[in-house]
Image 1 (cartoon, rainbow, N blue to C red):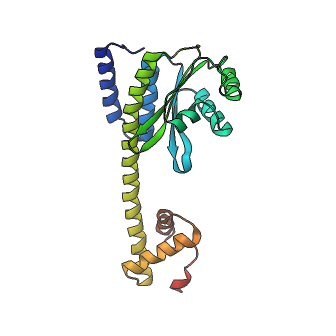
Image 2: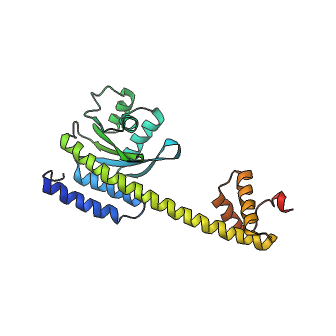
Length: 235
């Protein structure tokens, strides 16, 4: 457990900040978060679920397969503390899955997995919720007020780190995509004697006609040196 004195908390979270700063990409960042949770809180398992396009949940880091199963139960069933925490943007605590009657179907299945208490915490930034931190214990009533306070601080650190890592990855993908599109345009310009504007239009039209991302069309052209079906407007 973390030292809950002011100096102890400051020291532990200073170490966490350094770990998150040097963790690299999104997966490395969330892995650092769940490992810290195991050390800092009275939990048996921990996991992070990230919200991706279409409000889907992506599970990049768990400390035990049990966590992934608990997440999957809530995604399939549409009920549970994680879904409520995500919807209400607030911490949700389950003291004991044997007595909590808010989500009986979920609680029964989680209890069968050996989990007795749960603490779900939203990972939120000014732009919105980016994911959820789930803490699980095989003991009943494992999470008290101190745990909630520490989990809240952990979630704030994690939210900023995850959002930053995702932003860096998106920027990297955008730069890579521009390079790939430029290379594919060069192939079209040389092969069909097109100017750059016309070459880009060809790629864009093919992307739309085949419902394929522009980046993927560019990769396809670079690797094969041709589009699978020669566009009609080049014939």
